[in-house]
Length: 171
Image 1: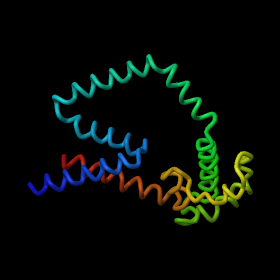
Image 2: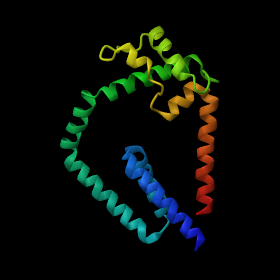
Image 3: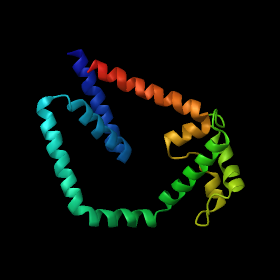
């Protein structure tokens, strides 16, 4: 009973955090983990397949509208534009420091220097004061690769893979 109580409390906390943040990444992660955990159950497999087929069919018919909405959000979005430029900058940092990166937490210090040295941009729509205040790459994988190099990124991916392997053995 105690284990169920702890798991129930953890579920409530996770769902509350998901509801409060209303973030797409954790929402997608929750859906994927739910499918992963439910798939071994024979009765649930049918519903997963049927639901996936229904979603795929709905997306196929709604794509013209969905595609237009996505393009409208992407084309005029300052957030998307700056993220793509930050990712380009991170890739340049990784190319310059591939093995050990620039040091954990040093992206904030080095990113403007790299932007200017490699003429990444243009950042016409943003003032340099705003660009200089950016402290994150907005991608955990690129951030780890830039700050800790391929070695650090590989270690992170190995830990994540180990968690999946150990978790699947427990199930």
